[in-house]
Every structure is written in C-alpha cells, then in structure tokens.
Amino acid sequence: MSLRALLCCAALIAAPPAMPADIDQITVEHSNKRYRVEMHARMDTAAERAYAVFTDYPRLVEINPAIIRAEPTPGAPAGLQRVHTQVRVCVVGICRVFDQVQDMHKSPPDRLAASVLPEQSNLRFGQAQWRIWDEDGRARLHFVAEIEPDFWIPPLIGPWLIKRKLESEAEETANGIERLANAAPALATPAAAESAATGPTATGPTATGPAATGPASPGPLVDG
Image (cartoon, rainbow, N blue to C red; front, side, top):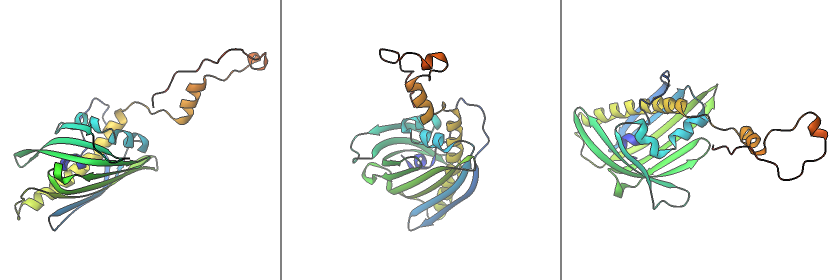
C-alpha cells in the first residue's frame, strides 16, 4: 500500500448513510525524517465486519477513488500476502502517483500488520499495525504507523503539510471502515453454518418413528 493506502480506507459507496466514527485521539510526530501517526477510534459496526472488509485488499479500489490499483502479487514469504497499490495523492494542488508494495500479516480475528518493501516503493521505510475489537457494542480501532518518504520534503512547510495529511487520512480510515462494514452482507455465524450444513432437526412423531434409510439431505452451503 502507498502512503495514502497505508492510512486510508474511506469512500462514498452505495450504502445507507452512517454517522462518522468517533475519533478519540490522533497524534502525528516527526523525527529524523520519519513520521509516526497513532489513532484511537470507535466505529458503529461489529469488529468482525470491520476486520473482514479492511483485509479484503482488492476492494481498496472500491472504497477510495484515489486508489487506482490494489492487487495481490507473488513473492511474499510464507504466511504473508504481498499487495501492490498505486495511489494518486494531491497536496495543495500538486498531485503524484505513488507505487507501494507491502507484505501484509493477518492475525485473525483482530490484528493486521504491514511492512513496506522499500526497493519497490516510494518509501524508504514503512510499517503499520491495526487492531480492531468489540467494546461496549461498537468496534474499537487502534492504528499505528511509521513512515519515511523517499522524496524531498521542503524543510519549513513540508512536515506541517504531511502531518495534516496523515491526520485527515487516519480519520478517513475509521469512517471508511465503518461505512464499508455496514454495507457488507451479513456474516455467517458458526451456529448458522452448522445448522445449514446439517439441515433442520426432526420434531414430532417422525422423530420417534423408524429410522430413515439412505443418506440425509444436507442444507445449503454457507459462504462465509
């Protein structure tokens, strides 16, 4: 993912309107050419839904028009998924397309980590961690990222502009996850999947009658 894709998962999609996520805290720090952003937010959706949509990487192109490419690529170490994105980022009227390749590490049900491959990216360094969990009926999001761009940044105004951009993108992240999660189809629960696979339980006189012969007819498969 790119500088923007590391932080953003926001979009207008065909879904009922939702209240914006509650941002409890956003901090951006700048030191030795690196930027560190941290966010705590609460979203009006279930954590399971939020985690599912956020880790469906090809759908990034659906949820943010700035992302013009997002697709898995080969070459990741075992247990990781490599993702290549191209993102068009505009700051004060100046636009640029960024290429980024990252190895994504999913730790279900609530954690995701990303490491940038600098030799294939527009960052000298990039790491990010997300955690999404349920708390008091809402999904909580904790996000931390540290990046170092590989391009020149004006020393006076540049760091301030990047801080502002990181803050806005972090907030859009929470809002976009919430919006997409609430638009997603209902997730199948383990109980529902078991019920569908085994079919309805017999009741009444047929339950105590002679044993049925032949194979039972299973219910429809549930695509979770």
